[in-house]
Amino acid sequence: MKTSNYSTLAILDLIKSKKYRIPQFQRNFRWRPAQVKLLVDSMARNYPMGSLLVMEKNEQLPMHSRYIDANIDSDDQCEQYSDTDNISYVLDGQQRLTSIARVFLNADSKRTFYFDLKKMVIGIVDKDDDTSWIATRFNKNNIERLDKGAIKSEV
Picture 1 (cartoon, helix red, strand yellow):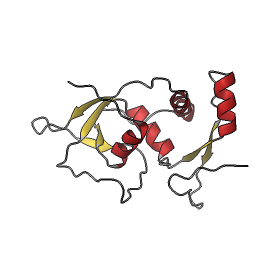
Picture 2 (cartoon, rainbow, N blue to C red):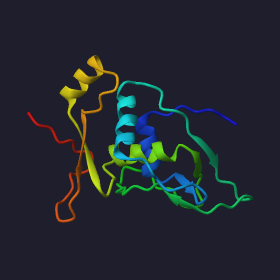
Picture 3 (tube, rainbow, N blue to C red):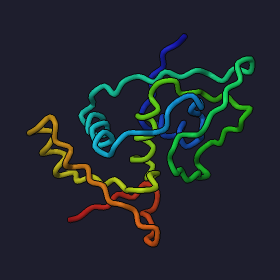
Picture 4 (cartoon, rainbow, N blue to C red):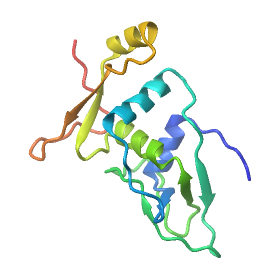
């Protein structure tokens, strides 16, 4: 058993490359938007966000699995892994990984998350439990979503 530390960017790269798989025995993604906002707020405040428990793929222990429940667009900058490459099964941390993917990769099919940076600074300084700086908008099927990585800002 080993412990490793990863930056948020490294975790996002691993998610995009589909290195993480969710075993079939795990429940589906269940977090409500309020729970996702609390995770993002904790990350912005540099609070610990918990650990992930993963198990490396083992040919002697075949396991049915699925990808993280997020609409991730692959790009050329992301290394792609095949089924024969080293993948990890997520035993604990699926809700957090899926939330991170949906927010920071704009990969939620139902909503887009926006950040009001002025409110964030005020909220972090003034209140410990204020997530109003994270807004969500429902995606409409007939409206094109923002480009990957784009952040809507109002001046």
